[in-house]
Length: 96
Image 1 (cartoon, rainbow, N blue to C red):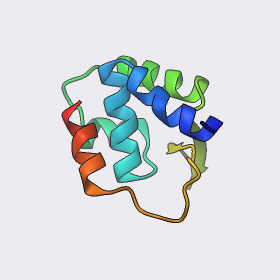
Image 2 (cartoon, rainbow, N blue to C red):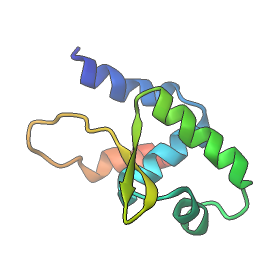
Image 3 (spheres, one colour):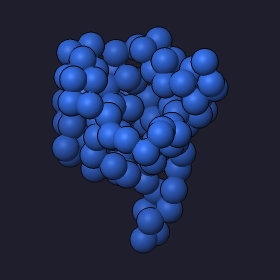
Image 4 (cartoon, rainbow, N blue to C red):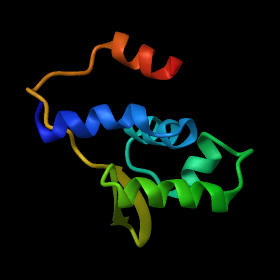
């Protein structure tokens, strides 16, 4: 198994709230913590979300980028063979 595939498989080892953040950013694209809270989790404390985002950055799943003077987060690419992820995979990930 390649290291890219190993990283993707490691997503399933993340705790539920951290994996949910990863999957939300993966589906929605680059976003700031504020955008994430507004769209996805207004009920979770901002400090908790910041901690989860930082964990994902430190573990190499995401990276910080600067867009229009705002810090956003981007999923680190998993190299694929030029194909889209089937909807069945997204459905399984949503159910986890």
